[in-house]
Length: 286
Length: 324
Image 1 (tube, one colour):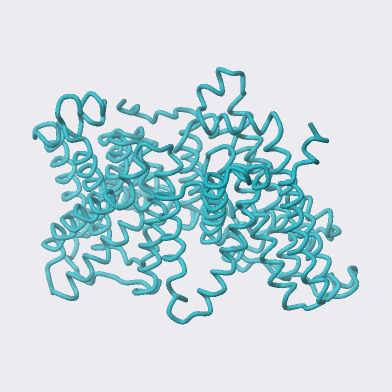
Image 2: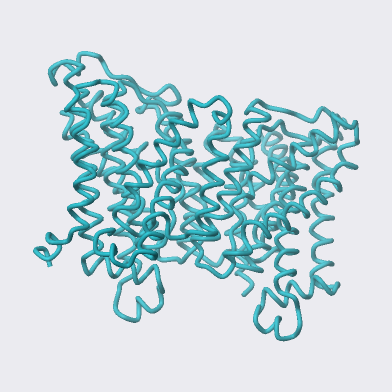
C-alpha cells in the first residue's frame, strides 16, 4: 500500500510539471489581456496530434518533433488572435469568451470529422528507470524535465529580453505602455501566441506517455482552469506550483477512488478555492 | 406596470408566434410533426432561459444543459423509484436544478466575469462524473421506466401528447417570464449589471443576489423539461442527459437571434433548428455541424453582436416597440 501510494504520488508529481506548463499558457494570456482562452483544450489536443503525425508520418523522434509543434503553436496562436480575438479585445468578457469558444468548436469539429474520436497513441518506448521499489518511465521523467526547461525559458524571456519586458509592460498597464511607444497590438498577439504555444507543447508532452483522442483536451482544459485558479489567475509561477499540487492530488485520489471521480474532485476543489481564496494560493499578479 | 405591459405589441407578437408553433401539431394530429415541434419548443425554452443569464445579465453559462440533465435524473428517479405522479416529478426536477443553480450561484456569482464562466464549463463534466458513479441513479447504465407507467396517463400515445402540451405550457411560461422580467425593476437591475456592475452596485442593486436569482430562474425550466423529456423517452443515461454540444448550441441560438431580447432567443432557436435539420441531412455537412455552429457564432460576435433582432432594432427604429 505504501509503495503503491508513493509510486502514485511520484507519477502525479511528474505529470504535474506538464499540467503546470499547460496552465501557464492559460494564465499568461489572462494576465496580459484578461482573456480566457477557451480553445485551450482543443489546442492541447492539436499538440498531441501534431506530435503524433510528425512521429508516425515523418518518423521524427518525438522530442525533436516537439520544437516544431511549439513553432506551429506560436504561429497558430498569433493567427487565432488576429482573426478571432483582436476585434473584441476591448469588449466585455462575454465577447472574448464566446469568440475563443467558437474557435474551440471549430477546431474540435474539424478534428472530429477528420480523426473521429477513436484513440491514438505515440508508440515510442524509452524504457523505465528502476529506483528501489519505484519504476519511473523515462518518458515521464523527460517530460517533467522539458516542462521545467520550458518554464525556465519563459521566465528568462519575460524578465531578460526586450519583447518579454514589453509583454510585462502591456500586462501592467496597456495605455501607459502604448504611450511609451510599445506596439501593444503586436505584443498582445505575441502573448497570445506564447500562451497557445505552451498549451500545444504540454499537449505534445502528454502524448508521449498517454493515449489520446481529439476530445482529450476537454479534461486537460478543466485541469488547467483549476490549476490557474489555484495558483492565482495571471500568475505563471503560481500555475507551475498549482500544477504540481494538482498532479499530487490526482496521484493521491487514484489510489483511493476510481479514476472517473477525478472531475468531481477537481470541480469541488475549484469551487472551494473560489469560496475561500478567490485570488488563489499565491495571489494574482495585478 | 402590469396593465401597461399587457398593452405592449411586442408581447402579443411573441405570444402569437409561439401560438402558431404550438398549434401546428395538434391541428394536424401528426405524431411526426409533434416530435419536431417538441424539440423546437424545447430549444425555445432553453434559449429563452439561458437568455436570462447571457442576455440580460451578461454572464455566460457554458454548461446550461447540466440543469436539463439533473432535472431529468431527479424527475426520472421520482417517477420510477418513488412512483410519484408526473406533475410532481416534473416540479421535483425543476427544484433540483434550481437548488444546484442556487448553490453554484451563491458560491461563485459574488465573483466577477470569467470565474463564473470557468465554473460553468466544469459543472457539466463534474455532475456527469458524479451521476456515472451514483448507484441509486443506475450509474453508467442509467435507469428505465416500466412501460406500465404510461397506463395511468391513458396509454403511451396519450402520454406523448401530455408531455407535448406540458412543454408548450412551460415554453410559454418562460417566454412570458423573460418578457415580464425585462419590464420589471429586477430586470433593469440585471441589465445594469450587464452594462456596468460597479455602477449598478453603487445605485443600490444587490448584484450577487440579483445574479443568483437570475441564474436560479434560468435553471428551473430546463430542469422541468428534462423530467418531461426523459419521461417521454422511457430511459435515461448519463451520455443522453449531459450532452455538452447542446449547451453550446443553446448559446449559438441566443446569440443568433439576439441576446437580451425576448423575441431573439425564439427566432434564434427556430432558425438554428431548421439549419440543423438541413445540416444533419446533408451528406457534406453532416460531420461539420459543430464547425458550422462555431463559425456562425464567431461571425455574430465579431460583426453583429446584437444578433438578428438587435440588428433589426438598430436599423429600423420604428419597429423597436414591436421587436422586444
